[in-house]
Image (tube, rainbow, N blue to C red; front, side):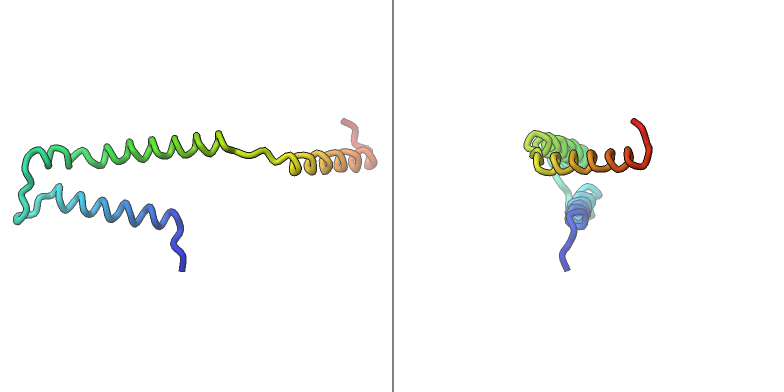
Length: 94
């Protein structure tokens, strides 16, 4: 069974979130030095900003490389012309 892209993202977020929570909650046997803790606490915000940047870059790239479908556009124009002609034959005026 193939995992969807959403499932992959959710698994990744769950894995990172649980690792972050395990380190941020500082279990009794694990004491992180202060500089590591200061970098660890705002990590979800940094990751959210990075994800937003990645999403914007992906959408921008896909928009920039979007292909024109000239054959499909011509076919659609033919369908529109045929539909208009059919409506004219049935008495509808534009």
